[in-house]
Each structure stands twice: as C-alpha cells, then as structure tokens.
Length: 254
Image (tube, rainbow, N blue to C red; front, side):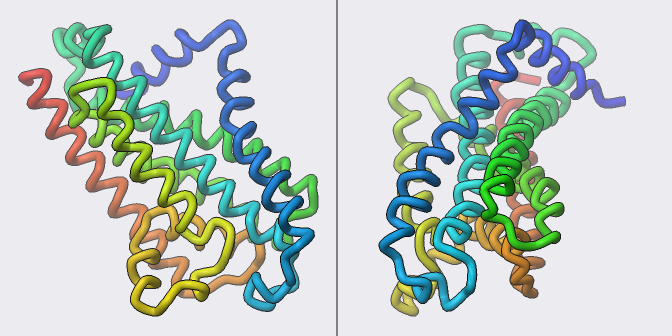
C-alpha cells in the first residue's frame, strides 16, 4: 500500500498555524494584480475584435489565462524550490527512505501536496473572477478538475526539473522558461496574431494547452481541441512523474 499520503500529512502539519491561508493569498495576489492592470485597465483600450469577435469582454478573455498561470506557478514553485531545499539541505528524503516508504511514495506525495495547494489557489481565484462577472458558462464548474489536471502536469514536470538543479542560480533557468511562456502562450491575445509558422510552436507549449482548456470552459466555447489539451496534460503529468521517480531513486540510491 502506498504511503504517499503521509507526505501530504507531513506538509499540512508543517503548514499549520494559519500558513495555508498565506499560501492561498500569495497564489491569487499576483494573477489578481495582472487582472486589474491588464485585463481591466488595458482592456478599456482594446477593441472587442481582438478577442476573435467573441462577445466576452477582454477581461473575461484574460481571466482564464491568469487562472491557468496561477495553477502553473503554484505547482512549479512548490515542487522545485521547496523540494530542492529538502533534498540538498534538509536531507528529509534520506531519512524517509530508511523507513518502509519508497521514492515512488515520496514523488507521488510531493506531487499530491503540490496539486492540493495549487488547486486551492486556483479555486479561490476562480471564485474571484466569477464574482467579478468574468465567467460566462456553467461549464466553468469543470474548471476546478481542469485546474487539478494542470497542477498535476506542472507539479510532475517541476519535480522532475528539481532533480536536475545542482546550484541555487540554476533556478533562474526555470524562470527563463516560465516567463516567456507566460507572456507568449496567448495569455493576453489570441493565437491568430502570430504568423502561421509560429502558431505551431506556441500551441506546443503546455501553458497554451492549459489556457485553451480553461478558456473554453469559462466562456462556453467548447471544441475537440480541448480533448487534445487534456491528453497533452495527462501525458505530461505521467511522464514527469516517471522521470521524477527515476531521478529521485538515483539521487537517494534506492
């Protein structure tokens, strides 16, 4: 029987005394500022045609993208910096593998804890944009399980990436990947603004797939491509988990 849930319980115990609420606030604070400054502020200057002729306002176009970004950032931050510290300095996992727990349990537990935190932040942000009238479809109720899937995909990828970080400055490489992806994965404008040759490259980004999934659910504009996004994120999560377990097993010599 897997003991992965013990990792989740351990993190919840460490985060008691109110810190979980601090994590939620931190998770929605940044996307909320982007929503106010770009979605609402710049949205006043943007013609409705920029959203592909959709009746939704520009803020409603940007909001689901920021929701996906919030889930991505929470997931990656939780499974890279925190895990890296536990591996390199706390030596937490070196102690754990002396118990009946295996590296597979550690990896799954870390991913589950990250998904829990990311989903909590994303759900709170979804409630915020719903209260602000930026959700236009009952399909948005599926945005929460979609956020879980997004968190799973990025948590697994983040955990695998953390095993390749040897020095503190290597964390900058993650930002070199995440920041351009945030800016160019159709967060603030549709895919059609790119030249045809670039569109395929943008569509291959995991954040683009995440945004398309949430944008379709919150606007009610469903399409077959959303099933492709689901398959993409599932494959990313499963592949990331497999690589993370393999790398952790080598690092912990199990």
